[in-house]
Length: 472
Image (cartoon, rainbow, N blue to C red; front, side):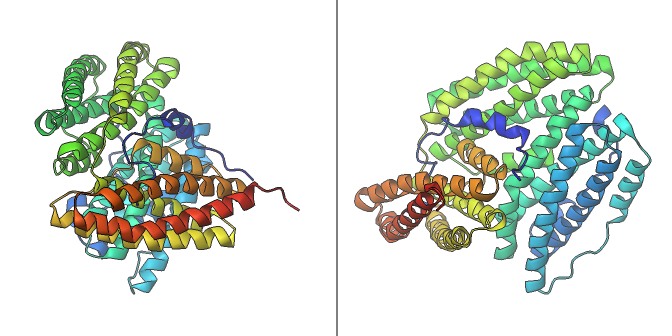
């Protein structure tokens, strides 16, 4: 049976042509109740401890599954029920992966919820209908914000390479969960939309102020100043309406937004520009979508009117971000590492969703080879004090979301087609670096990885041809 596609897919499909540079296919308030969150740890305290992260993440998954099973019984909104089923499916799979890893390391995982999670479950069990829907989705926004932040920090700074890899692999899925939770929560509760839009504005202003300090690109500077001016004005309008409605607005970034801001502060040059513009493309796709939904389906006339007025400005921001993003060429190591991470992400998904043994064998080979290549890239980057990206660019995120909506031979065909496209570009870029790189170490790396990438391409082409051929 074909999987129900994420609503977010329809949004990200608009990004099909937004890639630029060598990133694609390169080498490698009122809504705060309930206040309790599924995430049961303080992110900054546990992120470096991989064992504790694994235990907390598993327990958070247990809570997510239990609360989502409750949502299937009590939710009155179809979108909430669909979200709950996806949480059960995804977190069951993720917990199974964590169980296997924990067993290999003799780590005892929790078997029950934390006291805070039990209290949240009890509060939700006492609610029904629209009240339950709002409380359940608000809890999911808070939980996934913390979970994304924790996974980011673990992927960056964890003290166990295997747990780091698992956190890295879970990050895009958790980000999709967070985006979906915010989208549904904002429709159910207009106050949540005000809070979310205002906090996003704070994050946009802070990153854009950093961009004015870091970039040497006139186009990026102009865009950043425009973001500061427009989002400051928008936040003033949001604050005025929130005061009128008695909604308390945040005064700081969310946990996930702060971790992103801290990571961006380590970047410089064209790599900063690419990360900043990639972030703006994805952020403004979501801003446009949420403003449009609030304009069409919002429950509060005043909030709807504000969203309607904001929509044209946000749409212009998206168009500008796309245009600038296309023209930025980050460093070879930045692109190679980012693409290698994506290859690993897609291959892990193939191991989970494909039933074809040849596809699974190919996926495992891709994981092994790109993991080895990325280790070399990390070493090369360290010698140059170069910070590598943890964000997926828009076109790669779109590809991941698209694959999440497929199964069976449709998945296999799409996965192999994507690998053919990516590895054609990868071979061309590696060839160029192998022949013309100005740095001997990078040239040597490109020469060494080129046969591996060529082998991936040949295998992917062969498998794709097999899936394209009619069955005998």
